[in-house]
Each structure stands twice: as structure tokens, then as C-alpha cells.
Length: 464
Picture 1 (tube, rainbow, N blue to C red):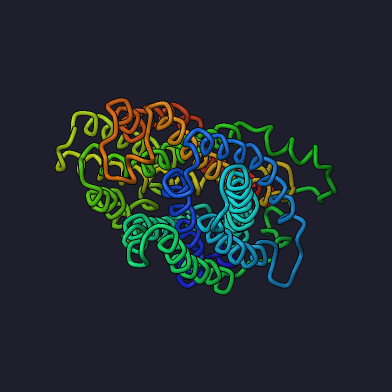
Picture 2: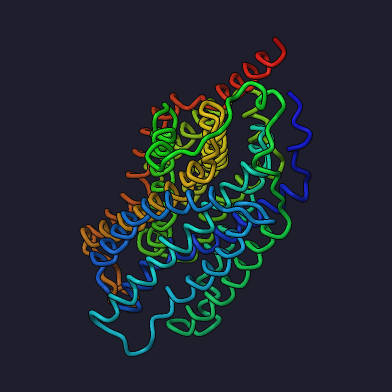
């Protein structure tokens, strides 16, 4: 079926990817360093930080669905999603600055209240606005599943690049500005500006087609739309076999990714004995994925074999990586090899999951003659933020269980054996178990094929 009206040119595809770069800068900085900042600088307990993050993730479930509904009900000359991308870009960047800049003199309960409020603002409110609207934008830019897979592949390249830069150079930038409070202030200003510009570029360069514009086959085969209650719309969203498994896959995937990403600095510093190894490990986890994404291997594989098989390949790569990391110990060569396989798995896994959200939105819309693309796209924001938040929370809780000492870290002293076991669990053991679970879940996710079958069926009805 021809999709000429809804094809996205190179400028649009690259423009769509810019936002993912900006979002990933903020999420990498917050996800990777907020636990260390709150425990080592603000002197909050790791247990409190983990509990704070858990509460924020509970609130996230409500905010994501609410934002999806807001996008669906938005009507402006820029479209439904673009205005919120622009608004969210400003708010998300500013909120990161306030997360890492606790006012001088605030301690105890006041510090806990400030940190909790700012963390909620960053993740539950501001992050929701930009993540949900950006995900919904893909559906509004193209209705071709293969086109969207290509768009998401480019977006994931930008995300990998941004995550690599943020993860590798945040600490050096902190040190350039003097470390401690001044260092975090300077670092958040620098990365905040870069993230803001990246996200704004998406709102400027991308265009939405008229949401009401139907393909000729669909227009003749589908019944007229009618207003639906919120309960009915939620029913459409959840009464199919794809939404719930996809939400679980998102949460588990980004939980595992955030957990081992955040644990990298602890593994390098405490177990390998040199924090500088973090840059090597991050490069090994990011550069191969960037290469695969920029040459277009991932969407080509998905087009030829299907998105489900691409996911199977991704999670098998992660499992093999876990085995190599388990036997690696302090062997840098084996650790790098394990990280490379993680990178391959992330390139395929994260890209395909994000592309499947747009396919699921199409599936629901076509089956029920409705447009709840915004609500369905909230799966991306909800799954990523809940998964990443849980990853950060579990890291904090596991460190607390292992007896992690912020004072020891601040004074350059070694951590205990139980702490290092906790760090290994976060870097290797728990993520590997998660990817084994994902390998079973992905067997149910064949939504891209079902969308194509639905479109072909509608076209056949029209031509009959």
C-alpha cells in the first residue's frame, strides 16, 4: 500500500531523533548520578533515595496516561504533539538543574523535601510531557510501520551518542568546574543547554499530518468515529493482547539498562579499582550500537525478519553478555567484550520496543476506529521512566543492603566485601535475569505483522 503522503524525509527523520538525544542526556545525568549526588554530597541515606524514587514511579503511572489524553485532545496549528514537545523541552532541561542544585544550608528534613519535590518535577511532570508527546509525534508523522522503525533507529543512534557523551564526560565536566556543588552546577548548565537545544530542534523541524486524514481504504471501510468515555478509551487500550506485554517489556528492559548503567561507575571504581575505567566500559556499551544504528542494520533486519525476531536476537545477545561478564572479574578485555554484546542487544532491543508502540497505536486505532495515539504512546514514557526509576531505586536499595558508605567513597576508602557483591549484582546478575524474562515476553509481540494484515484487509474491502 502506498504511503506517499505519510513518508518522512531525511530532515524529518533526523529532526525526530534530536529530541531523543536531549531526553537521553537528561535521563542519563539524572539516572546515573542522582543517587551518588544525594548520598555523597547532600548526605541522604541510600535507603531514603531508593524509597523516594519508588514513590515517584507510582505517581508516573497516572501522569503518563493523563498526558497521553491531553495530547489526544490538543488541537493547534502545530498539531497535537509538537506544542508539547516544545514546552516539555524547556521544563525538562530546567528541572534537571534544580535536581542537582540543592540550596546551600538545607539539611535534614528540608533537604529530603526539596530533593523529593524536584525529583518528582523532573520525572513525573516535565519528563512525562516531553516523552509522551515525542512518542506520539511518530504516529502523527507517519503511518508506515517500516518508516517509523527507520525513524526510531535514527533516534536511538542519537540517544546512544548522547548517553555516551553524558555518561563519559559528566564527571570530567564536574571536575572542570571545581567538583562538589560548583561542579554539579556547572555540569547541569552545560548539559542542560545542549539537551534544550536538541529537544527544541525536534519541535521546529518535524511536521504532523492532519490527524483526521484517513487513507482512502480506511475511510471507506471504517465506521464514523464517535465520542468515547475515558473508561471506554482505556478499555480499547488494554483489551488487546499487545499493550500489557509491551508495558512489561518496556519496564523490564529499561530497568535492567538503567541498573547496569548506573552501577558502572561503582563497578569501575570499587571493584576494578579505577573510576577511569568507566569511560572505557561506557564506550564499549555505546559505540557498537551507534555504528549498527547509523548504517541502518537494525531496521533492515526488522523489515526482513520481523520485529519479534529482532527482539529475540537482542535479548540473546544480552544473555551471552551476562555470562561473559560473570566470568570476567577484573579482566578488562572480557568486560569490554561483554559490554559490546550489551551494546548490540540495546541497539536491537530498545529500537524495536519503541517502534512497536507506534504499531500498537495503529493496531488499536484501526481495530476500533478511534485515535488514542497519545494515550497509547504513553507506554514509552511510562515504561522508560518506571523502568529507569526502578533501576535507580533498586541500585540505591541494593547498595544500602550491602552497607555502602558515602563517607568512605568521599575519602577514597575501599568499600566492604558485601558492598562490592551488591555492586556486582546490579552490574551483572540482576540485569541478566531480566533479559531472560524478556526473551519469553517478546514471543507475544508480533503487532507489526497484524497492522499490515489489518491494512490489507481494509484495502481488500474497499476494492471488493
